[in-house]
Amino acid sequence: MPQAKFVSGSIMRHIWVMTSTAAIGISALFLVDLLDIFFLSLLGEEELAAAVGYAGTITFFTTSIGIGLAIAMGAVVSKAIGAKQKNKAKQLLLNASLITFVISIVVAIIVTSLIPQLVALIGATGRTAELAESYLYIILPSMPIICLAMALGAALRAVGDAKLSMMSTLAGGAVNAVLDPIFIFTFAMGIEGAAAASVIARLAVLVVSARGVFIKHGLGTKFELDNFKRDLKPVFAIALPAMLTNVATPIGNGYVTREIAEFGDSFVAGWAVLGRIIPFAFGMVFALSGAIGPIIGQNYGAKNFDRVRLSLTNAIQFNFAYIFVVSILIFLLQNYIISGFDLQGDGADIVMFFCTFIAITFVFNGALFVANASFNNLGKPKYSSFFNIGKATLGTIPFVYIGAQYYGVYGVLIGQAIGGVIFGTAGVWVAYRLIHKVEIKESIEDEIELELTPTSSSPLSSSCSQMEQLNKEKLVEQD
Image 1 (cartoon, helix red, strand yellow):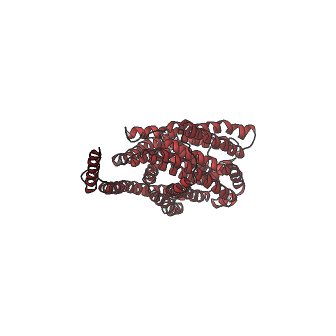
Image 2 (image 1 turned 60 degrees about the vertical axis):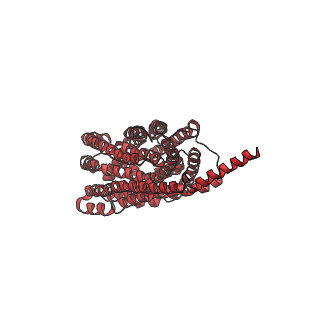
Image 3 (image 1 turned 135 degrees about the vertical axis):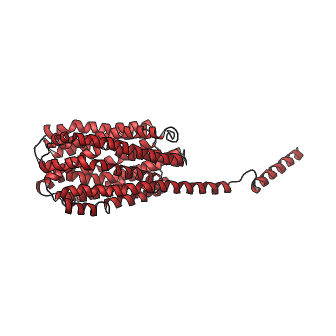
C-alpha cells in the first residue's frame, strides 16, 4: 500500500507531474473525439458533424455523472491515505467502486430510454436527429464501463500513481484511434462505427485501470456489508454534490447548444468542432482539477494547512500560465483548424470568433475547476455544487439569452464567457476563505482533544501513578 507522497516535497512539482501525466491520457481521448469528427467530415455530410455535436452534449451529461463519482473516490481514498489509514482506504475504494457501478447502470437505463426526447430537447431535427440517436443508442449503454474506469483512475491518482492512470486512458485512446477508420470506412458503419469504436476503447481503459488498482497496488479487500453501509454516508456526502456539480455543466452547455441551433446546422457543426477542440487544447486544465484533488486531500488528512493553501495558489498560477500560452497558439492556428475540418461559412466564422476573442476567458473556468477540487477534498462538496449549478444557470442562461438577442450567435459565446468570469472569480475567493475556516475548526478540535487526554501532570494521571506505587509496595511486602 503506497504511502502519502504529497505531504512533502515541492507542491508545484507534484502539480506538474500529476497534471501532465493526467493531461496526456485525457488529451489522447479528446484527440480521438477530434478524429471522430475529422473522419466523419471526410464522408461529406455536414449533418454528421452536427449530429456528433448534439450527441456529445448528451454523452457529456452522462460522463459528468461518472466524473462526480470519481471525485468522491479520489477524495475519500486520498484523505484516508494522508491520515495513514491503509485498511480504511481499501474499504472505501471497494465500496465507492460498487456505488459507482450501480448508479451508472441506473442512469444509463434512464437516459437511453429518453434518447429521442433528449435529442429533440437540445434542438436536433430531421436527418441530424436520426444520426445523433443512432450514435447514442450504441454509446450510452457503455456508461457503467467508463464510469467505473474513471473511478479506478481516480483511485490510482489518489495513491500517487498518476503514470498508470495516464496509461489507462492512453490505452483507450490508442484503441479508439485504430478502430475508428476501420469501423467508419472499412466496415462502412459511419457514425455508428465511431460509437462502436468508443465502446471498445472504454473497455480498454477499464481493464488497464483495474489491473493497476487490484494487481499492481494490491488495493483489493473483502466485501463486508457492515462496512459498505458505514461507507455509504461519507461517499455519498461527496458523490451527490459532485454529481450535481458536474451535471450542471452539460446542462448549461445544452442550453448553449440549443441557442446556437436557432442559427442553423452550420453553426452547430462549428460548435461541435469547438466542443472537441476545447477539451483537447485545455486538457491540461481539465487534468489539473483532478490532479490537485489528491494533493489537497492528502495534506488535509495530514492537517498541513499551509501546504493546502499553497496547493490552491500554485494550481491557480499553473492554470493561468497554461491557458495564456495555449490561447495564443489557438489564435495563431485558427486557419489550420478551420481548413482541417473543412468548415465553411457560418461554421468557420464561429470557430474564428472563439479562437480570437473567447479562448483566453477559459482561465476563469480553469480557476473554478481548481476551486471546486478544493471544496470537494476539504469535505465541502456543497460549495462546489452551488458554484457549478450557479454558473450553469444564473451564469449562463440570462447572459447567453441577452447575448443572442443583441449580438446573435457570437453573443451566445460572449454571454457564456461573462458568466465564467463572474463565477470563477467568486469561487477562488471562497476557496481561500474555506481553507482558513477549516484550519481554525481543526485547530479547535485538536485543542479540545488535547485537553481531554490525560497527561503526567493531570490529577487523573497522578492518581494512576500513586496506585501503581502502592501495588508495587504490596508486592515487595509479600515477597
